[in-house]
Image (cartoon, rainbow, N blue to C red):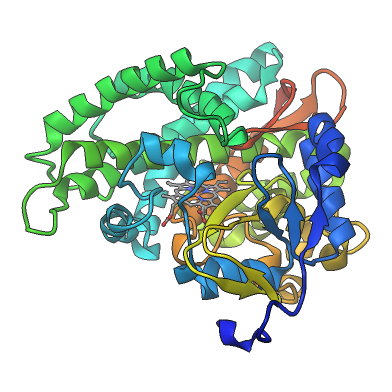
Amino acid sequence: MSVDIDTVPAGGAARKAIKFPLYRTALGFVRDPLQQLERMGEEAGGRLMRVGLGASRPYLATDPEDVEQVLRYQSERFDRSGLYWRPIRDLMTDSILDEGPGWDASKRTLQPVFSLHNTKKLTALMAEAINGAVDGLEEHARGGTPVDMLQEMYLIINETVVKVLFGDKITRAEADVMIPPLQQIVIRIAYRFLFPFMPRSVPMPGDRAFRNAVEAMDASLFALVERYRDDPGEGNDIFTALCRASNEDGGPVDDRWIRSNLLATFGASNETTTVALTWLWPLLNRNPEVGEKLHEEARRVVGTGRVSADHLPELRYTKQVVQELLRIFPVGWLFSRVATEDTVLSGVRIRKGDTVLVSPFVTQRMKSIWGEDARSFNPDRFEPERARRYHRYAYFPFGGGPHQCVGRHIVQAEAQLILAAIFSRFHTRPADGAEMPKPQVGLTLRPDKPIMMTLDPIQRSA
Ligand code: HEM
């Protein structure tokens, strides 16, 4: 249901946004930005907020109806321009993470790769990669050595993402070379994302490391483009689709466009999925009954064999765990839009050029929506009957509307398969206490300290 701005009474908006001036929030933002945002969300009770951040005063929409207006119904009146998107746009102009004609062309090319039909084919490839990667945990388990779960999740997810991105077109060694620069890019770009008002000319921490990482990544990506551009062959992967695409005149596409879309999808997939799955372990330390149910399901469905795409429909509880994990720790925790014309949100007039932020982190933890226990980890919330009662935009870890995450089906399948592979083979326990780490704001929400776990192999009778 789209909003007609003429319904606002002449002479101004019917309502005003609730204001949070910088002098009231600065200390809270410095101490713990996420807690400050959550507090403001509770205080505003779903009303549109105007947040003083010094150089700018963006709106923050937390009510599901408003979020849906911004991302879906009024998506033509809001775009991904503005300072918050600038670092990403600078790095990947015309890619699927941009706006305008470059985004259109990228979306047209990539959408079929992420269709349900193609995702099923990719899932089989992912299962194979996951089984191989989880084999790598055996050695740690046999030796009883604690593992850093973020690093382990990264290794497992990278194996699977590389399959989705490149199919069989790159070697293991070529993929490994790209990991350190990719991690650097994602970590370093966060400074620009968190301080968007800093002019490009003002140096920020990590600028040099960022530039070096981009250079290294470009060397790898352009070499691959050069090798396959003219003869991409067959494949259901992203790289093949990009190489086979043609531009508007039917000619071959630009090398840089292929490179930027590879970087966009590589960056958007590895870090997000890794960080999301890493949060599961400290949550399980505090909620052992959830771990028990995961074990029970994995043993019943997968048994002593290898996980496969055929197991997915039976991994129902595992699916709920993944959904709840992305409610409590939505790694794409905040994103923005800029109004391209005057409009209205909940009766509040928004001027052309105003920034509106939406935050899955805030909305998905609001007590008015999720109840008094909103902050506790309870996968039963996603029992199908119960989940249907929530507003579609009470839960939007993958965004919504035209820019909704194209990788969402892949993430869901990948996460279920990884958990089933691990829980059918290992028991896990915290190696250094069950203290809950804190999420650190950046492009995603990395834990503020390593999460060390010990894995014990499950004795198999077969
Ligand atoms: C837990 C994992 C993930 C989370 C939480 C996540 C979250 C998101 C969110 C919130 C958006 C919307 C951005 C906006 O509205 O401006 C988005 C877009 C996108 N995501 Fe993901 N994502 C995840 C994994 C992936 C994966 C695995 C891929 C690719 C294989 C991917 C590729 C993309 C792309 C290409 C877009 C841009 C779509 C467009 O603008 O049309 N993401 N993601």
